[in-house]
Image (cartoon, rainbow, N blue to C red; front, side, top):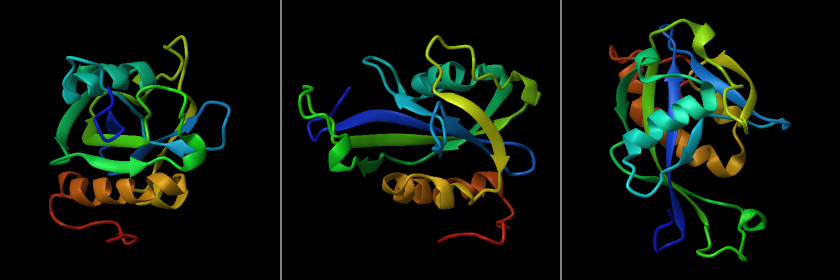
Length: 167
């Protein structure tokens, strides 16, 4: 689904472990790392899309995670001009996303990247909370920063954030 401004409805998934580290996944056959994310289908709520994408991209079921919360509204990013497919209708110029913060409550062995016929990722690792801001592709960096800042209190409820906190 694409809105009237050309933004595709999407969900982003940030998965934390009990130590406050985040799951960071490498796009298949690329040297590009990101959080799991995916489009929202017609008649699907953001939460339903999040659970579907969670399973499709990293193999987890609802009982493998606790939902800690989500961003209050849509966070948007524009695609660089070279990625805009002008021949497709409607034209998609970027993404508008609701970001979810989840905590893994099952064993790591349930993280599976090979359950889909068309996997998105070929590797994953746990990283420090703010590390994705240094590694994500530049056009997504502002959205990642907004999502991580807004959702940090869910992971660090006592207000103590890792030393490398970015404001």
